[in-house]
Length: 115
Image (cartoon, rainbow, N blue to C red):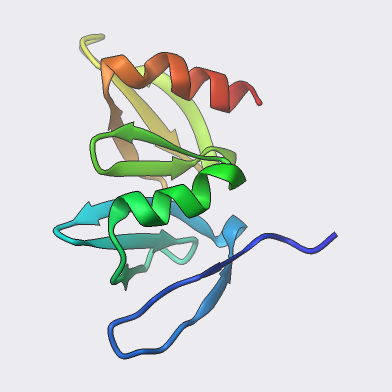
């Protein structure tokens, strides 16, 4: 079965195509969206975060904090931070980011991670 694909809308009217599995994190950046790929590079999509997220949610993306969503397939763990004050996710290599999770989103994140 073919992997789901994502068509990125770049500023220069180019539309590179990526497999959804190569996308790790999307982040709002003003009216646009930064897309972090497996290679740790970020690409800019001229569409809003909400529009990009709506296209990626059916493929396992979940919003973890306002303006930040992750590909659940690449989350290594959901955990409390060192002070046990806040929740965070740790992404799988090669990205290895640690990102905050809003308290009100923890239940939804758990549900998506559980499959």
